[in-house]
Length: 220
Length: 220
DNA sequence: CTATAATGTGACCAGTCGGTCATATGACCG
DNA sequence: CGGTCATATGACCGACTGGTCACATTATAG
Image (cartoon, rainbow over all chains, first blue to last red; front, side, top):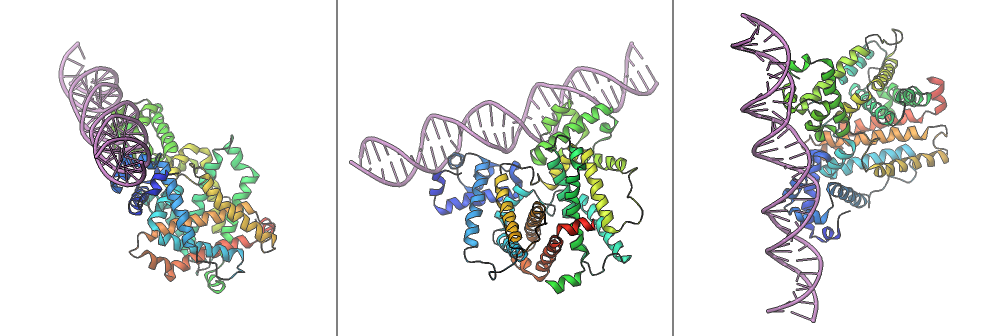
């Protein structure tokens, strides 16, 4: 939590600091973010910074507060269309609203998203080719399946690739992060519980994808 | 690419360097990884390091090479069960094989996964509570839907939450990363193309989730 | 055994980091 | 005006960073 001193600051100065922090985290992520640069960019002195915040994590947490504020402001007069949406309609509305919120605060959301969710595949370092290699393999697999009549030709190949890639990565991360907590990772991975969970996951994906695009359009 | 000098090294020494690098990237990610620590942990001198590699990225790229080698070794005598799997069966087999590979090389995969895909939600910094807040909201939403009879009670709530969370994050990242490339992010987000893509995505998710667990079991 | 080439080494460099603190500045009050 | 207190400042600190290079060690060849 930033000190009261910071919150008392004239808005202009306060925003300069917040914006500098947003840019810094968005450009460098958490570890590589530099307090020196934030200080230089916002035009305050280093001493002042340490009077406002205790450390780097403190500034970042303040960004989360800023988001919370912005969100209540944003959703103040924005409500779900109609009262009796079902769960998925509501979820869909939430996602769409989130997209609008991201659009309205792109740099801010980019900064916290980069720190909390990672740099993201679509941005990227020098590893784009590495990623393309695996997505291209999936794309070819799907196109082959379409050619052989196994998958409906109206399926959106790019979308299917994105979905498969997302799950491939999510499952890999899940196995690694959750697995490292276990004392016997191999036993855990091969356990009925874990296998069943992944099976269900893939089944949900598969079932959704098997629907043809024409059905999508008629049902949405 | 590491210099030939490095590849000529006695295996023991070479592995010491690779293992030190793996540990470093797994523990600190790319930005915060320290060449000094890698050097110290592997027992080589700093000068030698710079004779083997040009910089940090070069070591990391070598880890990708190591993975490629390990993978060909791993899949040498591991083939899909039967020749006429359909696309999804094949994908499922690939995912499962990937899980086994991760299990066999957990630290190595953790290192590159952390760098390429981010720290992952399930690991985490001091932001676990931030994440729990949103997942709990989704969980309650689903439980409410089950209570009211809208969603089949046999649905695995935790699984559904994981799926919804994954898509929520993936969509958010997609919008931010892809959107920042556009000259007019708002126009892009609201365009029919983008909206349709997200709609389809959510529809695939929804359709998979609407199936009841009993159907899962009978069909898998 | 000597000469030459390849490899290994760690002290050293300039630069940056997060963080501190004595001092300066300004705001408020009697 | 003087006095008191909150705030602002940037020089300075030790630690660490990625990177270099003159020199030591070892291997190879004649």
